[in-house]
Image (cartoon, rainbow, N blue to C red; front, side):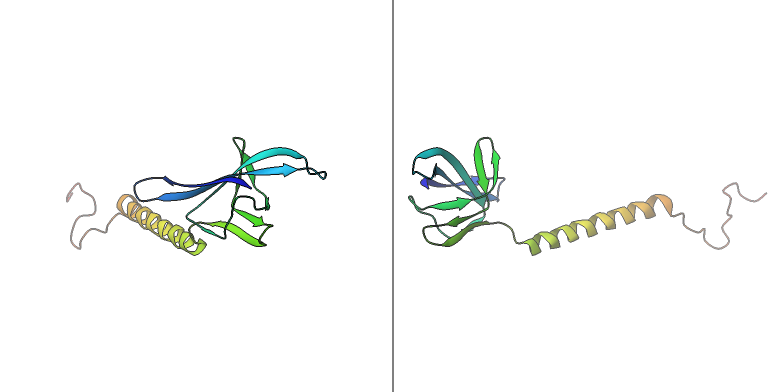
Length: 131
């Protein structure tokens, strides 16, 4: 691993994401360098550490020529390094709250447009008045 850099990217007024970028040099069985792969990790925080010269194993997906990973293994230290985002429990609660608000609004619109109130006692049911 070479050329590690850390930066913050703001995504709105109060939301930011920490981005780690570095290069991984791939070697063949004879020790010859095959290629250099740019790697990017994004998260709110990170668990674990990396230093220039560490050997790493990473799996992810390629996007625009850069390998994007959420977790990798530091073979030099034996540690696992991972990007941490919003906890899943917080996301589940947020989705439940949004669904409840949407259901409440839909219920209100249904009542507004489809529920016809009963006329008060003694009020003629047809708006034409007495015959």
